[in-house]
Amino acid sequence: DIVMTQSPDSLAVSLGERATINCKSSQSVLYSNNRNYLAWYQQKPGQPPKLLFYWASTRESGVPDRFSGSGSGTDFTLTISSVQAEDVALYYCQQYYGLPWTFGQGTRVEIK
Amino acid sequence: EVQLVESGGGLVKPGESLRLSCAASGFSFTIYSMNWVRQAPGKGLEWISFISKSGYVNYADSVKGRFTISRDTATNSLYLQMNSLRVEDTALYYCARGRGGDNSNWFDPWGQGTLVIVSS
Image (cartoon, rainbow over all chains, first blue to last red; front, side, top):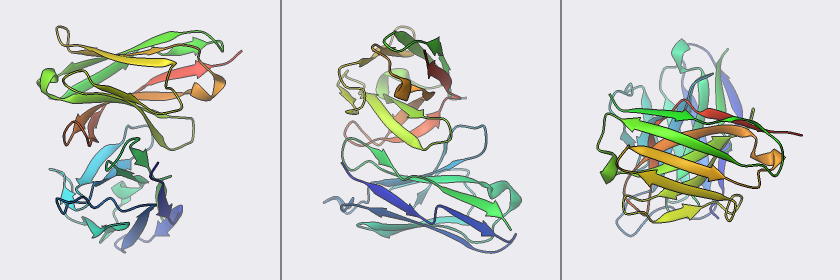
């Protein structure tokens, strides 16, 4: 199984500051088609996860552009360029390169 | 509006069975794969089962041999038959549409989930 490891487990950021979440896979999720098989989700308290990015950096429709996804191979980053109060949530990465599809353990973003 | 609504959760004893349902609406159910993903209380997300639009299925090792996924295209419904339930199966069970193709799924959207509690 591909193990996904996120860091940090939690971070507290001041409003308007940048937040960076890292996700590392135990093996490359870059396929021969030059696509990274990685997605990012946001889960607010009491809600189901919401898709933010797929193919590591393709933003889902409706996701604010302060969110960006980057990385390739085994190392990926979700960045919130200017954190807003509504961004308080858990964030998960997920690989869909190989079954079983697996998630990172989650990173909690809070306001300082 | 694309919508997924789960039902069928509840409190059961270890070794008992439960059948979860997911009603899909607002999209062409027949052309998408579907998944079940669970989240134990206070824990992260665990993919547990997938069914392709053609009926191919796959399971996480943690549920293989005990859980069965199925779909009914006539009623746009997804099911999860859960047998031999264990305490560690306690979780919120989400139904999620698969995107990306039969061999690689990201999940969008997700239902609100149905809670399964396994306790003696």
